[in-house]
Image (cartoon, rainbow, N blue to C red; front, side, top):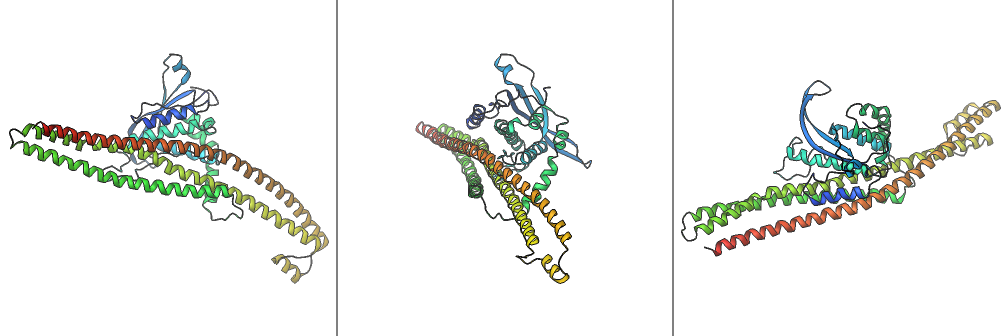
Length: 434
């Protein structure tokens, strides 16, 4: 097994995982745009397996594990066929990896995981997370997640990510040793707190609003698609009644019988084809869902920027307050109402020694405050710079992916309509021969 600090690692996708050309094109695009990491190792989530075991509270449970396979690209290009490195991971381990990335790289639009349970499903589609078709789509989604991380210019170099790909046991302990969980807990509390930034960055405010709007329109699109799938399923299955009627009719005809029987077979085949059509549509729906979840990742980055800006403003406010206290103490003039000022009036002024001690303490606090403001300023500037670079990268990726997905979806719909026309042309030929 390779050293966890090695830089000679990369990840690409197995383009044989799905028959949809749009998904293959997406994977090829990520390879072409990839960093050195992406160009030096192949990766696939090759299969899913259902297992049964005991959970943390010693209760029997059924769960799914996913087989990750990796191998160096160089070996394949040189004509050798090395043994694939393979390991099994649960969905919860993918979640742990993503949570670590969210905390460690707050400026990054971290790729989302596929849904844990099916959403926006049409009525004939199972919402059971153990359903084989759902597990298969999630397998594809998990591979896509790894490809996204592996193609990211920053995330792809993370050592924990590499350990996830190469270590079946022990990698989780390494994750927790980073202390990310404590940061995650405190950051989560801060992000969930109610606060208002006095001087919000207009770019991030607009991007957060865009994330809200993007999530809204994709949600609507997925709902429309689910309703259309329900109706399409009904229309196709009703055509099976043509097949039944034509078959019954053929039984009472002599000259017309064969033609009616053949036409009925075409209608039966047409009615049965809807299951494969709608299953293929689910792949396109999953591509839209990825960006539904990406919108939330985008909003999270904007929210983290608000928190960073708020912390800077609080540091500046605290420093201003300390400087005002120093001025009031030095001049003996109280410019604003305070409990301390009222106490001085009621119980007398402080002695020179007390005032001098307080001034020294304030000077120390002001020095610390100035240093903190300087650090907060640098942190905020660096966050803005890094986040905006990644947001621009994400926008380019989003525009490309959604355009390709929508074009492929339109092509699929055109192909479906052509098949419907062909069925009726075949039926017409059967009628002509009667």
